Amino acid sequence: MSSSENILQKFAIRVSDWSEKWFPDSYIFALLGVVIVSIASFSIGAPAKDVALAFGDGFWSLIPFTLQMCMLIVVGYVVSVSRPVEILINKLARIPTSGTGAIVLVATVSLFISLINWAMSTVLTALLVIALSKRKELNMDYRAAAAAAIIGMGATWALGISSSAAQLQANKASLPEPIYQLTGVIPFTETIFLPQSMIMTAILIIASIAIAFWSAPKGNAVKTVDEFDIQFDQQITEKSQVKSKRPGDWLENSPILTILVVILGIIWMFNEFGKGNPIVAISGLNTYNFIFLMLGLALHGTPRNFLNAVSKAVPAISGVLIQFPLYGSIAFIMTHAMNSQDLSLSHYIAEFFVSIASKETFAIVMGVYSAILGFFIPSGGGKWIIEAPYVMQAAHDLKYHLGWSVQIYNAAEALPNLINPFFMLPMLGILKLKAKDVIGFTVTQLIFHIPLVMFLLWILGRSLTYTPPVF
Image 1 (cartoon, rainbow, N blue to C red):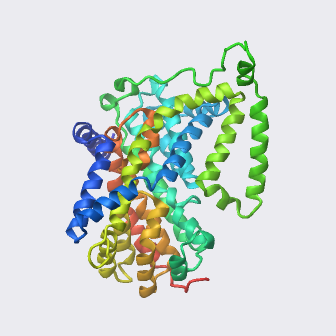
Image 2 (cartoon, rainbow, N blue to C red):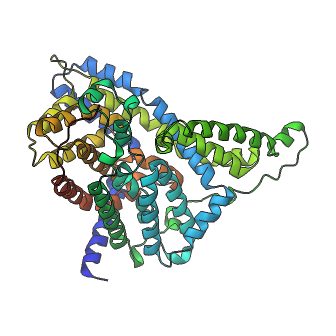
Image 3 (cartoon, rainbow, N blue to C red):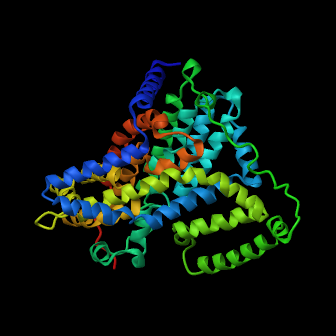
């Protein structure tokens, strides 16, 4: 083992040990976020009453998104524990020959799946970690493997086809009118499919996998799943053995109703995908959840098998249910608590970064701003609606490439996901871990990613030229 590997592993382990002792539960983290943005709003002159009203008004503002995320966890879990997918995951789990190799496999799957759909990566990679943890001979560090499962959310998801900001900018119907008047339509060819964007994505994938490999604990430093006293259900996919003694039992154990409902779902999906671009259709969480719900029904066969799987998934959504309302309050306080000049905290933050930017420093300044704001408002599409008026106006004024401005946002706003429990919750719920268990390894990724991402945004952006908006 080289000295550089020793240093990286020791750093990750020391941060992990520190976080296990000092890092609070993610619920405490959300409460602290509310307090911090409230104090910051007071500092700009926002009245206490307005801050309190914003807190209450925003508390339920993420209810649709909360339900979508809960359904995402449930249907993703249900599909993933079905017998066919279980076989696939188990085949993948047999590939590695060492604990380090297992962690690299998880990181690779996470990075590539998140490019297709970020939601899928959080559930399937978590279940892959569980399958790998059952291979005791690997001696796999459970913390590092769990951290590898979230790498895609912190590195590549926003550079793929499920990027919320890129999707919004490519669809006129989705764009709020003020943003459309400023930017026009920006197609995928000017954002995620730019050669510069694909180069950046490839570099981040290679770097993330390398960091996961070099920081993976070995020898006595490894903490396997057994040391966490976690018990996973062994009979999730087992078929119900209840004998049909009454009509209700017969319906529960018959595939007839499932087949009829799935047929209706297939007809709807053909109609939905026939309306336009299939990539646009599947990028919506409602459509995505619907597809996986129908797939889960089909893979489990009978209503009873499906319901058994759902009951196993429900405990994983507890963190989402109790914490997402607090994140909604944070977003509202930042954007709705106004001072006497009718300006919010979000405006002052944006104004500061825009005022210090030049064409040469635009990528780095906007990248830092998006990363910082993303720590408090962890919502790709919602945060873009907040940022776009300031960021794109600055890009116009500086004659900076509009599509690359979107990619600056995408690459930078993903960074906080490496340490923000918001998007970790689905994965942590399935793996029965807490944020403090994985933070040491995700911080290691973040420390390397920040300078790398900022450098790539700056150097690759220099090769692009400004083009006027397309309306």
